Length: 348
Image 1 (cartoon, rainbow, N blue to C red):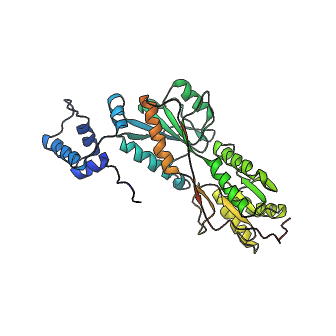
Image 2: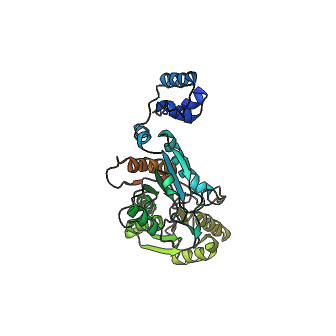
Image 3: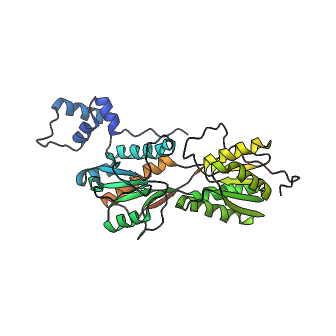
């Protein structure tokens, strides 16, 4: 089955006509103000490319063009470009940029927010939210009090990731972690695992709660389904606990911790998955060097970025039907770290 052809965008029109994307936007919106001067031959060239390509403006873009600045804000609670997290945020930003471009919107990254108590804050003396028609919120943990204020102020926003109610329902586009983890537990049970342990980061973020909820719901039929908190720096201690408990498969919330556990297992002369299976519950949040393909799932980060802008444009132009809350499926990864436990080995 061949993929459908990619839709022609304003960026494509600009490239083929040899003009800026802003010029294409002005031509499409038929701007003839005194302060906007486009040479007739330039306008004709843009119109000719539009006709030749069959370009059709996105209806969302048309709605936004008539009433708004077409500027979408992006606020990240953690720095978006540090070397340690660029691999995690980058796909979200790619998806956001792609959809914003398709509807003719510019992006405004809010970078002036001060850090208070170790976290960036949206609201401060010089906050500039109103420069944008609405805002996308990115962060592993988003402050509930600020979401409550956004709700009370009626400012258009969408959170990337599921968020609990904050003075009312929160519009979001998230990943369905609970279902993804439950599916992995079911796969482990089919492999014969009966002693399962969830290795948590200990955070209270909604994404962590969803993962834990999916694990405990699906592991109800296991002989033993425990939980413990651990960090990558505690790998040797964690392995001691897992082996002493007789655990045959560990479901590890943090990817870096999973890599450290695999290394600690090998240092003992044991193997993964021969002596211990390890399942990861998401993508790395920091660069972690490893050649191992872990069994787990991938988070649809680019699609979450795209759909967050789609939802936000509906909030901005009033076309959204109620508060939009979307959970997107994760893609399971059939790696090499989940095997079948040897029933002859007593791990307790």
